[in-house]
View (tube, protein in one colour):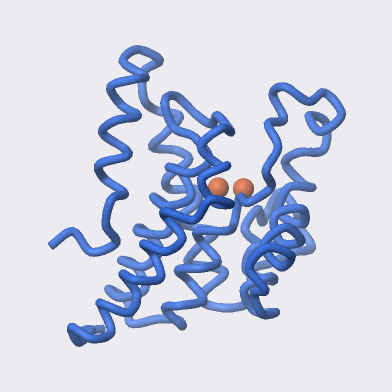
Length: 171
Ligand SMILES: [Fe+2]
Ligand SMILES: [Fe+2]
């Protein structure tokens, strides 16, 4: 799928608005795998998911962009909160969807995309839409890349990741 300059600009504006949104910036406090955090992870998933949608000519791009940015908007650090630790894997998609609906008034298809991103952990939540499948796969792809990094150079890696997510379209 080839986008016009106008379409690219519109998606980039949405991406930038979320990238600098105060509510979204809270995700930086939630540590994730090896030098990543929830904020970096979510924007990396968004960029990957959008690239794949464009390459394969699939899905509604705004739904993919918003669904990916918000897919882990659960806003707690399960590593520091024992009560959340046990059910985090299966519960966080629902918490993220509720938080996203509360803070950003997202519509139903985006909520469903968020709720189903952890399939097959939540086996009954098969990602039914193209958008949901693209995000669920992009999430797993980024997760695997993150956990395959060494534990060394975490701070350096974080800076590199932040540079990588500065823009939706790299050039
Ligand atoms: Fe997740
Ligand atoms: Fe994720």
